[in-house]
Image (cartoon, rainbow, N blue to C red):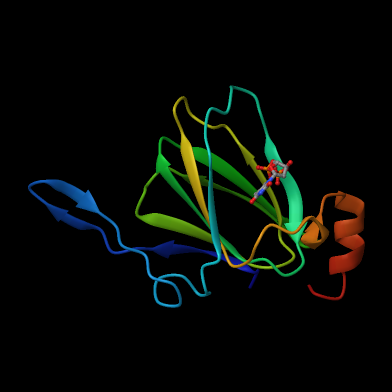
Amino acid sequence: MYNYCLLKFENIVNNYGSLVPIEQNEDIPFNLKRIYYIFNVEDGITRGHHAHRKLQQVLICISGSVKIRLKTPKSEESIELNDPSIGLFIGTMVWGEMYDFSKGAVLLVLASGEYDESDYIRNYDFYIEESKNRY
Ligand code: TYD
């Protein structure tokens, strides 16, 4: 069991369209401290290439599609996000890369903490070393 999983949010659909509500500690497993979103990503770009020591996040592709490569010392998996009512929870010490952004894709990220560069592990070898005992 790795430290990430897909979350299915309630999608309230009526004649006027769709609405997805997300409440902290209810629909996502943490207190929400920050949101950010990624868009205008050109063809062939891969973002991410890091893991977090303490930060937990939920990624939601609210428009278009994007692929997320998730690595741990013992696994590698790729998940396509293309549904605004699906979130990808990524816990601590999971290496993530985002690629294949479709034209116009918008990736919304819900984060459990403030931006803190010292929480990032941006070197894959250091990540493998630091997460050895974890997996
Ligand atoms: P980065 O984490 O490298 O983006 P990605 O993982 O998507 O490739 O962040 C890009 C830049 O934005 C970097 O200079 C740090 C800055 N940044 C903030 O200032 N605040 C934030 O909340 C985030 C996520 C990034």
